[in-house]
Amino acid sequence: MTTRRIHNFNAGPAALPLEVLQQAASELEDFNDTGMSIMEHSHRGESYEEVHNEAIALVKRLLDIQADYEVLLLQGGASLQFAMVPYNLLAPSQKANYMMTGSWSEKAKKEADILGQTYSGASTKDENYAYIPVFDQIETDPEDAYIHVTSNNTIYGTAWQREDFERMSEWSAPVVVDMSSDIFSRTLPIENFDLIYAGAQKNLGPSGVTLVIISKAMLEKSTSITQNVPSILRYNTHADKNSLYHTPPTFAVYMLKNTLQWIENAGGLTAMEAENRKKAQLLYNVIDESNGFYQGHAHPDSRSDMNVTFTLPSEALTDRFLQEAKDLHFIGLNGHRSVGGCRASIYNAVSYESCKALRDFMISFQINNQ
Image (cartoon, rainbow, N blue to C red):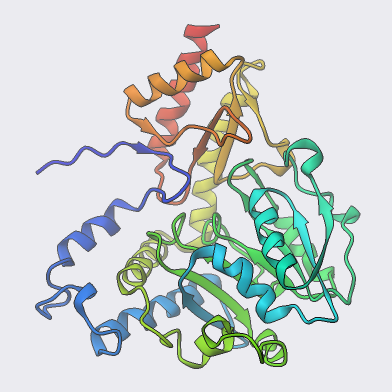
């Protein structure tokens, strides 16, 4: 049976690589000639354990993670990490520093506010989060429990750039990064981060598993903070049990493993980064050359390669654009209500061909509606 694949620009859950979906379909009933699905295997059994350990090994290979970090596969999405981070890292005598660059930063800080003291060393709310803070103007303190950054802001189409990541080594406090929407889309200076967390449903696979990368030094530091924290909310609990403290989301981990294998086979993060930059530039070129017909929300030097946000001259034109796009099998282009307009989420699995097709549609729509 031939399946029609549409142009999927959903912000998340998002597009998955076709090869990964096809592999899952072929193995769904009978995984590795075991006579049952991976979803039916015990998480204590050899068949699942191989999948689990290979997923962790792929994370380490692709990101070049050294032995002084632990890789955890958890549940609850990034939203649970908003609480787990302060539960594990925020001592009563300290403050946590949150860089405010969007709604997810706000939600992360709100959870931390319940558990301890926080402040914001920078905020771009003055322009509806249209830019990333100027690095030299960010306030930090060596006594900060940690500095929290959201690396890519899906709603607003902004992202911290490589040079920002490089300069985070200048901060004296630990660095925690929510990379839910851009991890594995580009190379990273892992050594500059003390904890990374990411929900899976953008570049890692389907929703259900959450990746956490934490330095062993941070794990050690957390021991004195988590004495009154429930066991399941302690990073050390999961590190000690190889993320098998309780039943993991086995199918999500299996899909994570297959997605990471697809990334590795495609050339790893260097190849992903180059392809993502090409895809994003297709769309940004249309915006920049439209003489104002399309207006990008993000400042050019803060643009995301994962989420391209833009508005049209009127709400009526926006509605027409979205309807005609839907008729041509482009989905997921509605902008978030806090920004309006349109948003194209172009994660790893969104093909260059889909981005080119959207580029062509944007150009023709402008010609027909000026």
